[in-house]
Image (tube, rainbow, N blue to C red; front, side):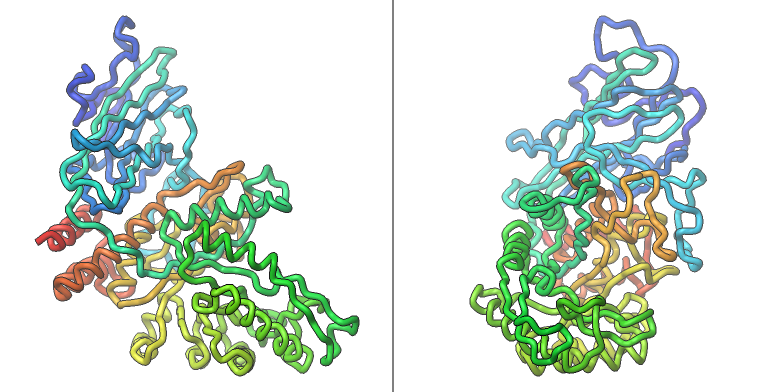
Amino acid sequence: MFILPAAVLLSCSAAEPDHGADNGSEVPADEEESEIIGATIICAEVDPLDKILPDCKEFAEADSPALAAKGETVSFQFVLRSSYPLTDVRIEAGDLSDGTANIAPATTAFVGYVGVDPDSYSSVPSKDKIVSATGYYPDPLIEDGSRDVSPSTNQPVWISYDIPDDAAAGSYSAGIRITGKKNGQNFLIKRTVSAEIYPVCVPEQTLLIYHWINGHLNFLNNNETPVGQRYWDLLSLVVRKARDYGQNVFMVQPINDCIITKDGSGYSNPSTKFTFDFSEFDKRVEIMLNEGHAKRIVGQHIAYRLGDWYDAFGVQVPYSPSVSIAFDETARNFLDQFFPALYGHLKEKGWDGIYWQHVADEPGTQESAESYNEIASYLKQIVPEMKILEANHSTKEVCGNIDAIAPLLDRLDYDWSFYKSQKDAGKELWFYTCMEPVGNYANRFLEQPLIQTRILHWINYRYHLDGYLHWGLDSWRTLDWEHGTIDWGGTPAGDSWIIWPAYNKVLSSIRYEAMRDGINDYELLRLLEKKDPEKAEELAAGVVMDFDSYDSRIQAFRERRKMLLDALCE
């Protein structure tokens, strides 16, 4: 740990000895240039799990190599700070090398800051809530070529390397160069990062990860709605980004993407005959399979509330004047025709084995439970093979019709014995987060420690769960990056999206990096379980003591990660 004093030059440790720098401190970029005078530049390497606030003046310097299995991503974070403005700051990351093999950098980015409305967080904040005096928090990874840095403000820098599955185990290092201008004069900072790659490989992912892609693609298209092939191209961008961060379950739109025609009678006529063209639906599925490498596709909900949260569900029927209608003969007539046609099409395409269906989102009241069960039971009668996956808000009464149950994390906690009995009976058991849970439960809010986003998947392992669901991969509402949250009736900052939009580009975030790393942790714990189940349980219990109780100390987490890797190599 060092504390930033006023106007004192702090040298950067672990510099590249062959670059001529004095222990990594700033040196002129032009060797003939006179010695730089004036302001100091701080360059500190910190743990990538450390959220660096813009006004932070204390940094716990990372002093150990990054430890990783083959198939993982190793990330490094630096903090730049100067008492004078820095302009045209650029990052050059060399290959990570063991002297023989070279691994090119996967990401070189500046960490951006986003503002959070003071009252955006829950009224029941975590005891570990991060409080920013400026109201700004780090999150998006901005892959600009250069960036200006305001005086007396931190600028985190992010560099990562994807370790190939066939990489040789051993010690690796890479040279990092940070250049720019200070007071109109060039500066150069040289650093070295190091990693220890273990002789073990992350196995093929088994954990099911499912974020809803909400299709707000206009934010990738100069705020214009994309049409035709442009729409599918931008959707593919989002899907590939999700795939690269561990998502393997994707939502598709069986009704909205289907071209549906009727025989001329009104939608409310229970004898209306429908015909179905699934060609547009096929385009979406093929993107999820080819670009997303989907292990499962899930049909969008077919029922929606007829009024507010406390009302019953109605069924979506084409040509009706409202989103859904009461579950009557008209609704049954449509379902009787649509789902046999859909399932027959899925079988023809060979997709029936990976297709699951949503019925209605978050049944959470007695009225919604009763109507949910009526619709879900009817669907099972029409197509008995159709499996249902659902985010279950708080009603256990609907679980009889659900094949993959995903309760909110806190509901899973309150009713653990019931949900465990469902899993023991052969059902899949997931959990989800969506605006909740709050309090001390792990989540992906901007004001929570980054380690708690990674811990989400240690929770998955600790309780032997099958998957994780979240509604907000990309539910962007603005291109104004000054705000990390939009008023969704109290949606906590960071809940609506975890990736960031730019023109023709999707940017990651430090939260998304932590989530991907947590997925890899889960798979390594499962790998250790095959060898030493007691050790795997012990390590997981040391991080996740209970559903809402964790050891969030970064150094302690790193020590347990090392124990995990060491145990896999014994």
